[in-house]
Amino acid sequence: MSERYVPVGWNVTKIVYDAVVLGIVGLYVSVFLWIAPSFQHATQPLDDYTMRMNAFGTCAFLLLSLILSIGPAARLDPRFLPLLYNRRHLGVIATAVAATHAYAALDWYFSYGPYDRFEMLLRGNTSFFQAHGFPFEVFGIFALIVMLLLASTSHDFWLRFLTPPVWKGLHMALYAAYLAVVAHISLGALQAAANPLLAVVTGFCALGVASLHVAASRVPPVEAALIDGWLDAGPVAAIEEDHGIVVTPPDAEPIAIFRHGGALSAVTNLCAHQNGPLGEGRVIDGCITCPWHGYQYRLEDGCAPPPFTEKLATFRLRIVDGVVWVDPRPNPPGTFVDPVAVT
Amino acid sequence: MKRRHRNTHRIVWLLLAGLLPAVILLSLMLRPIGPTEAPQIQLMAPK
Image 1: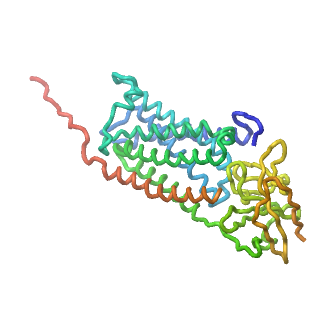
Image 2: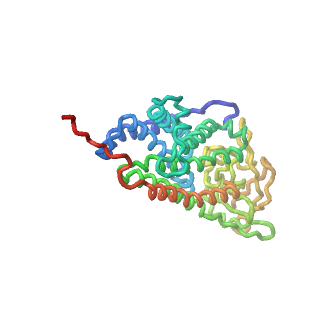
Image 3: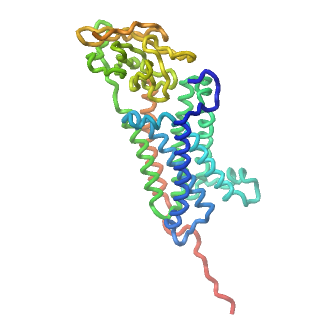
């Protein structure tokens, strides 16, 4: 929501969030290095370099699984919304952890050959037609490139520059990266794993992430019926003060209706920032506040308060016999509509 | 989230829900059974 470029708009919440995540990453790596030796096979002991590489690799995979779970979890249960707020910070940290894993692998496995280590990495193994010994590194390289690209374009500057649809489409490449990471683990570490723990954890994470996304996408929007060109949005009493409801016109985007100060206002349910679900947010300081990243809009005209410039489409409302009706034809973004008093 | 975007998400994740476990299971099935390296032959010390 910044009107000028700043690398990161730091506040206390973000600093605490990042400190907690970095603390957890440090703790995970330490505990891994402490207990992992007891899980290795007696005939195939792992050296310290490989242990460190595995610690950062598994940490990056778990972080990536967590990042991909936050969105659907927040849709299914609003208690996960605080995690969504700083998800991009988590993504940047996961990328740094993955890059550390890649550096450790490059430094250990490819540093002692006759050629340059990057050349060794890309040309050292060309067994593309066999499962055992497959050059699984290519999947890891692809995933790391995608993660670096997404981390470097995670700032709102790039969101504005690329426009939200392009940015969102670009960041959906993370799904392909996740598939590549699972293939990287399956054709790499799983082939030589001495105990089933890694297979169980990888399968649990992959299935868990996919199940959450499928479950969240199966929550269908309730479509309201049109009567004389107006939508029945239900009884006024169903809308709590400073909260909203969402109604979905047939074959159109949902509309959010809010109650504040004894009056109702309606705007599109899509936040101008990242299409977040405004109807799941609240009215804070007299403004509709997006639950995803806190973008705010005035109730009466859908405009973000100055100096911000985002605008939402507004909708006309009327109340008949205690029932709210909404005209599903959107006004141009920023159009003033008198809030309808609840009598 | 826009309706079109939500539909794309649903299709992508339905595909991934099949692909992710398939990759893991396939790689486990193709795992080599038994020792993957030649046994170390212990030579007798010269007399």
